[in-house]
Image 1: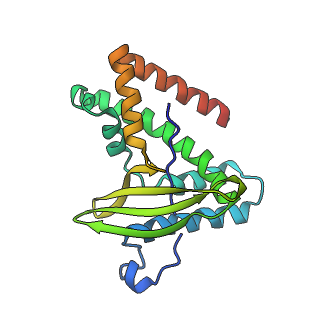
Image 2: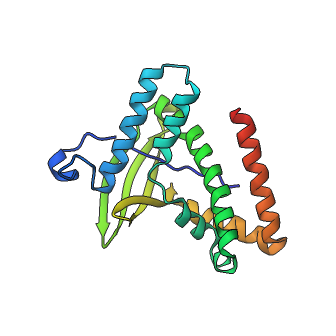
Length: 203
């Protein structure tokens, strides 16, 4: 499975321009930054050893701004329409759990090795793109584009592009190939096994 890198972010923006009257972040970049700040605070408080509670809190903030249902739909492509409501829900649950665990592993390293930098945001009729860079070893960095849309008046990520490679498109190519070569049931079995391995490693 294509390694999925998905991210969340820190609040150091002028409150008058990026938050509502009650202090809740309103722009895409401010929403991402607010979750990033929470993760950094938790990691600073925890030090090198993370308790189960802290791990769960960090994982929550890393994944809190994703629209997993939309990302799941995009990842199945045309095959999404062929699935029943129950099948869609089951796929979304497995898919989301895999992404959430991989996000935790990937971005925990990013937070500890350096700082994610948010460059700019572009907003157009309910959709937005946030450009950021993330640290790699040896002083290198990668570019990340977050594609967001508004869901119930909140900004949610529905795709992430890493150095030009779309998460949704990468998954879709792999999943469609599996379905057409074998079957949808075979894809589900493969994802269930992946999730079981991730859960076993976590424990």
